[in-house]
Image 1 (cartoon, helix red, strand yellow):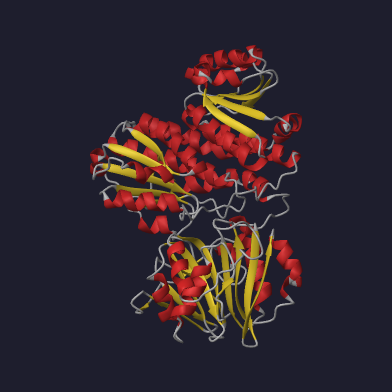
Image 2 (cartoon, rainbow, N blue to C red; image 1 turned 180 degrees about the vertical axis):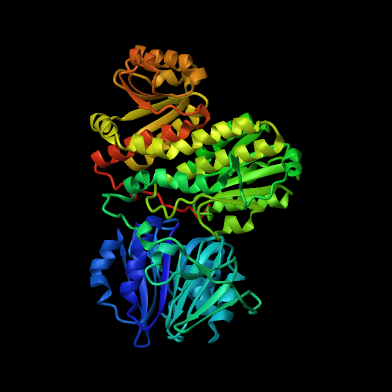
Length: 608
């Protein structure tokens, strides 16, 4: 979950590295460091804490001259955040400097081996073994050295390496952790993500696993582990750099919440033609859909909650049984998969380590893979049989908002598409749902235009110690996401429960003044939700309810009601989640939390 950036060219490297790291700070922010070559030395400066500490230490990079270097912003996995555990790590000789994103699983064994060879370790990290191992194998050729290193290490990695003996070369390699190469004029770059280098170039190479890249200021060569040169196509980034900037908003999160009408429209509109669904990148025929006996939706965190909505919708429209699995558990429970299984993977980054591992396990067992991802050319996208891209643009805030809404839209499209192919839903029914789907962006915008009411509720209850989210059916799936948003950015303890489970133990937690957020958008479950609200009110809870316009009966039971525009109930989650995102945001702001970079979290989880 760390961020890497590297530069080689004619300009001063340190300011470019620092600016690139600022664009990657969402990937890790407990420490940062840079290594820059100058005067036959690789000079390393690093600091515990936010990137600004390092930036101030280097006066924006002015204090560290040199035209080649690597930088790193860290999210700790091995060793507590500290100056010494920060990257880059160097070999004992000072000849090699390394930055790393990922986990070296056999580092303890390698550490013992290298200690036996006379190497001294100063950090608690797994990465330091890479620096010493590279130094041990170095023979004057950096490509040969890296090949020997990656043949010894096990785990996931994106590595950037510089060597004081090679002042005109920067080497990088990846396996299961994202890394791209930026192509400039008389300068070239490496980075964990596009925003880090978008200011300098739109032309990039997308590296595959175990591809090694050798960068010089005027040349880039890519090799496989047999040292055979590989030719790759240049990928051109077509979104604007301003998409990765705040644009006048106080935080990226509120900017991204407010971008959701456009994101939903961009994801849905190109796929709606003449009253039907057209998914050009999905090659599922009627025969393919008819042969599917079971569907797994596999994802992590917020994406898994989008998957839960997908389960309800697919089962209703396609009539195929669906299981939603947390990706980190999926491959370890020996799931029953065969050629009649469809596995739908959902990942914003397309690099989520657990989800990628689940993909590979499912493919090994013969399943067909359909991925829903936001990043073109990402690992999950490249390894899937079918891909549906969510056109959300870059999402910088660690807590996902617009990516979730785009994922919901994608799940609706997939369900409608498969239902039509299978014949379980009529063309007339699809046309009706499509008409409602087209209204979602404007209805989301309407909710956002009245966000002050939600801000007021947040100002009244931001000191709540416990918050409970209740819902039934689709509302329960959304309640899980609302609870996650609140806890991850405001650090308020919150839980989501299927409302019918209250009497099976949960109601014991309700006491005088407990805040309950009750979702009641599903018409066929509305009366049952009213009963559940009565149950918690009788125990002293304060209830904020969310319901569709016209269901005023709820005012008799809830303390406060947020009304949503009317929409087909299958699509209600796209509206219901908006006030929950806003509530979490405003509570976090009121508590003075770092909204975009919540503690202990990173944006793209690329390690298990």
